[in-house]
Image 1 (tube, rainbow, N blue to C red):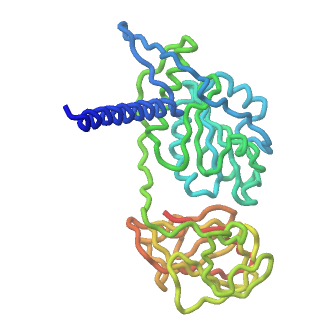
Image 2: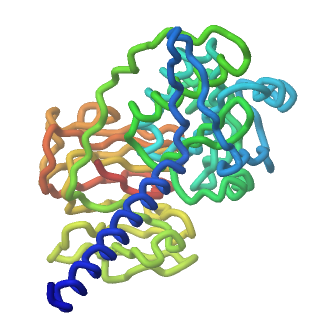
Image 3: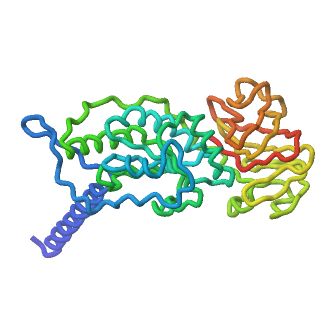
Amino acid sequence: MKTESKTAIILGGIIITIIVGISVGLSSLESTSLEPIQTIQNGDNALRLTNIDKSRFKVVPNLVGISDYINTTPEQLAKDIEGKVVLYDIWTYSCINCIRTLPYVTAWNEKYADEGLLIIGIHSPEFEFEKDVKNVQMAVDKHGINYPVVLDNEKQTWKAFENRYWPRKYISDHEGYIRYDHIGEGAYQKTEKVIQLLLEERAIALGMQPASAESLVDIKEFQHTSFRTPELYFGYKFAQGRNQLGSPEGFNPGRDVTYSIPQDLKQHYFYLDGTWQNLQGSMKLISNSGSIVLPYHAKEVNIVTGSEGELEILLDKKPIPVSYAGKDVVSGTVNVQVPDLYNIVTSEDPASHLLRINISKSGFEIFTFTFG
């Protein structure tokens, strides 16, 4: 065999060895994810645990800087956490992504609370009005939340978890190790299977009979539009780096600005008519009336508002038809009474439209548009 051929074979063998090594390494990394290790069966079909090295998991941080408690007290919550599998749900009540996850979270609470699951809603606000415990209590009642909710108004617990997202779910086992971490919506079946496995692990560790296998919660998941208008912020502080105010007057921090709507409108930009006060997190209508115009692409449009007002909704320059009217639209109008998220447009399929909101009362405050 020629020297060149021998060299090629040796090099080929080295490359294959390196590839196999990398593959094994990647497999090892995958096995160190935050998901729980499966239980296995012995010859007698009795469940037993694998040998889990928990040194690779983080210990769940303490709840710190909590200003208020809903559905619990500090003393009761500390007692309830002991020995439980805990799902920590970081959310805020005007966040549409958070709201879409709540039917699953409340269903898991109802289904698994008696088996050793404790759900704690960590309410970390985005806007100032979300710091008011009365507003959060209103949202808790509205969404049928019976599990404990703590108000993390200064985001100290948010920081303790090293979090940067709404919503985010962490699940700790009965010994307080974080075994699962999920950002955003979705992965509901995967999350529930983690709950089941950790409850099974807990039962075995405590010498209890594990619950029999249960079917997963069956709720229709919201289907996002792959291409849609991004979230639009009205506050000059929030809009930094993502300014999509199309009116030529632009943002003017801390001042009252009389806005105009140009002839040519760009998709994904919002336009204002009337005099609006520029605030860090929102805009407030100063004149007796005003309008917001938005060329958008989505199947769902929501607004977050912080004050009372009656809004006339037009779609493509006509009163919004029933087939597109969001759940908060009644006879073509939205009656805003409390600071919250309001659904303006809902349709089966995504499409491009021109939305116009006419406001007939000064003092109306708007924070953001969100889309689906």
